[in-house]
Structure formats: C-alpha cells, structure tokens
Image (cartoon, rainbow, N blue to C red):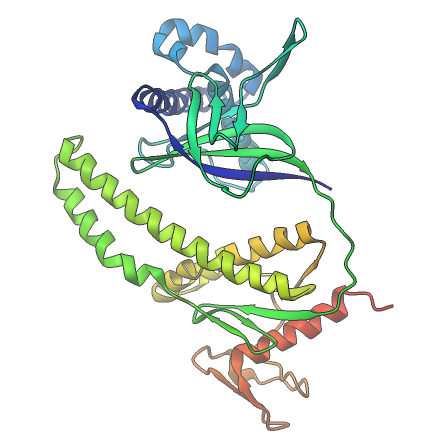
Length: 378
C-alpha cells in the first residue's frame, strides 16, 4: 500500500538562512494575495494563466528573484486548491493571508540527471542530522533520533515558523507492507468532553483540559500585546511569547492524543467509534459547551485512529452519527428518552434495572452496532 507520510524536524538555520526563510514566507504570501486579488477581478483565470505571469512579476518586483521559484508556484497551487474546494462546496471563499498567521511555505522535490550525475533539490541525511533545501542549502535538523534513513520518495518539504522557532515537514511517499491480521480483540469507544475516550472495556481516559493551564497566560499576553505600539520591538517580543504559549498548548494536546490512540490501537484489532460531525456539534451548542467541544480535540483522536489502523492493517469502523448510543440499554436494548439530558452521568434502565456509567454504556452499544453493521462473521 502506498501512503504519504510526513516527518517533521526542528530546523536550526544560521542568520543568513533565517533571513532567507522569512523573505520566502513573505514572497509566497505576497504572490498568493496578489493573484487572489486578480482572481477576484477575473474568476476565469486558470492556475496556468497565473503561473505564466510570475516572470513578469519578478521584473516588476525584483525581490521575488531572491527566493525559491518553486515555492512561488506552490503558493499558486494552494490558491487553486482553495478555489476548487470553494466551487465543490467543501470550503469557503479563499481569504487573503496575513503576516504572522501560519507563516510557512512549501517547495516541491525536483530530481534531474545531467552527464550521469543526479541532482536533487531536497536531500535528507538523518545520520549527520542535516537537510539540503533549495536556496538554503545545508541546514541542521533535530528529530527522529532512532531513524538512520527513511525509505521512500520525497514529494515536498514545508518550512514553517512558529514564534522564533523553525520547522521543516518532509512529505514522503512510502510503500507500506501491511500484514493481514486475524482479529482477536474488539473495542467500542465513546469520545466526549468530560472524558476524552471511554472504552467498552471500562477504561476511561480523562480530559486534561490544558486550556485551563494556559488560558490565564494567554489572556494576559493578549492584553499586553494590545497595549504595545504595533510593529515596535516590544510588540514583537510579546507576540513571540504569545505564539510560544500557543505552541506549548498545541503540543500538550498532541502528546496526550497520541498516547491514548497508540494504546488503543496496540491493544485492539477492531476499533469502533461514532461518526461525529464536530462542526455541527459546535454550531448547535451554547457558548459554554462550544468552548468545551473545541478544547476536547475529539476530531483529532478520530483522525489518528483512522490512519493508525490503516497502517497497521487493523479495522476501524464508525456507526451512524444519529445512532442513540447513550439512550439504549446495553443489556436489554430498552430506550431511555430521559438520557438525552447530558447532565445525567449514570444510566439507569427502567426495564431491566441495569445501572452503569453513561459513557461505558454508550461505548458498549457502539461496539455491538459497529460489529453487526460492518464486520462479516465467517
């Protein structure tokens, strides 16, 4: 099975390389916004038409010649993808990029052969901990200490800046050898707000709610930032502190989700979950519940379960999002309408007398429903 897998490394560029990265981020943002403005005036312009205008733009704006030309074209590919999603009703109308918001650029891998010598614009050396990138040349990296090499074909590299730190994410096309597994264990999981994950086996993974830990600091830094003179040295210092706090919050959530998902996938061969629509849940919830749903990272847990099961040859099923898993008794199938009330954390069946935790009851129902709807018994 051929998959695309990203390997993210911390970059340690020198002063010249940092300046060039910042210039490239600015140039790709400039050409994206410039062409978006043109598309607003003439929506019929194709991506090929926009790319043909780059040589003329480099004459009008000479600073565009200083950066990687492939990164400029990739910015237009992103713009084209944004319009495709908009026309297919999978996203909103593309917006102008702002400085300091998701600062990054992508460059594609190019391989040429001349006089029996192979030239590559992106090379990854994990033994000596360095990467060769267009224009930047050799840059020190850190990450994946146990890997000596990555088997696969490099597709592209995305260089990003978070606060005052730099990262590179290398996308690799790998041929994954997936071994067929005879399932011997199954689990149903219920993802939620109070507990991130509750399994049918009775295991509960609590919600650390990292936002509570960082929220006060974020609010204080936001207030400090609003008082600073925009574009002053103190303004940028405070902005870097704020971005660093957001980075720590994001990494804490990722680490927790990764640990939970890895443990569930390692211990079970068939995993069954709900098919949740996080966006719908956020739209329908009140302002207090909306904040809790966003903080719970339910969507990220489901996403990780999907691809990890695929890579390891395990089965991942989802039951219909409208299946009333919280209202049905896992022992006698009696439906308790009163369990629509989310404040009731204990399920009490009026038919058979079962008393069980609400989330454990839901996860058992999800497991049973998923098995009979999706799995073929021999």
